Image (cartoon, rainbow, N blue to C red):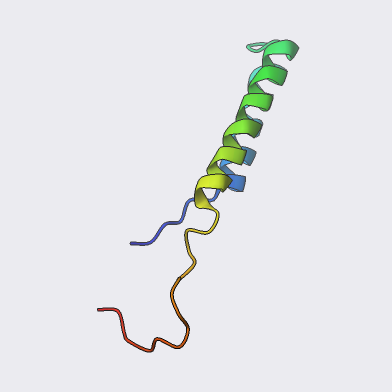
Length: 67
């Protein structure tokens, strides 16, 4: 299975959307700041979940193939 999710790209898109909402008057400055902080926390959580998931463990001297 291929996993092509990019947390940094997700964050950039979220901030761009929030900025549009703020600039159009649909989101107050305070609400914008809270939303940005929340997105930052979620970004950190995403990276924690992804950290190390692509590492292959085991003894490097073990040459058996995985099938």
